[in-house]
Image 1 (tube, rainbow, N blue to C red):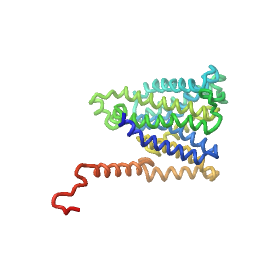
Image 2: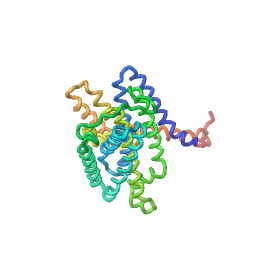
Image 3: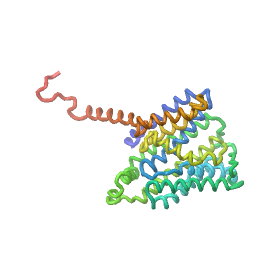
Image 4: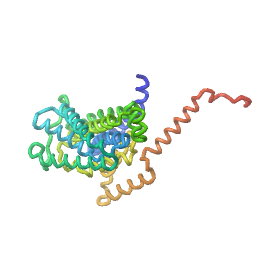
Length: 335
């Protein structure tokens, strides 16, 4: 238990420090807090994509479709069945998990770009079905959610939404870091690096890849439900192919195999266009140049230099703590 707490201490303290800094900077500006809320929501989905694509090696362009399923499931349960947000969000997340797991069936029969094409087609189908849903899904006009409350607590301000979004964000971050250290995470890494060797050692490739699809789908459903609560209004325009590409850019920018990298990439890709709006027409060009420079100089993601520094400090610490490291070698003058 103590080992688990010590391993989770650093990411949790980082999240806590970030939350305090955000609140201090955003308390008087609800727009900045809205952007941070959106960053955390996108980061949850990006973490799922890191597990599925970066760790399991399954190229997916269905992230926006998973968010759409989570968002619309939550909205439909609230609008048509009168459920509260919390039960609707939980059921929406599990519905997304079920559909994403079904998607794993045909995807497992393929490899590489063929998986990307299957997930791309899935995303297009989902958006088209929602758009043709008529009054049930709101069609192309979208859906407006009723006022969102949790246990009687109305989410009627960015500050309150921040508190609600921060909790699953922190849990997903700590839980996903822990997941990669457990047997499933190690098995997925082994399958990505040397699938034949992993199969020879008894790793059930199909089962673990389905688990990766299910995990990413669940996080996509959670992210979609939170997105619906944040916006209050959803439409198919929020879940197009371009949105899926943006999620892929997030993990490529931050670090394909790193949870922290996926989160960092999500914050950069989500927040940068908002804060570059001052450049007016040139904002997209400036954002593109920034992405280009980061990818060129840090091809492993923006967390690469920090990971190298962390390994260096860890190595020095181990050497300093090694038995006899501080003892004088034989024949050396005493201090």
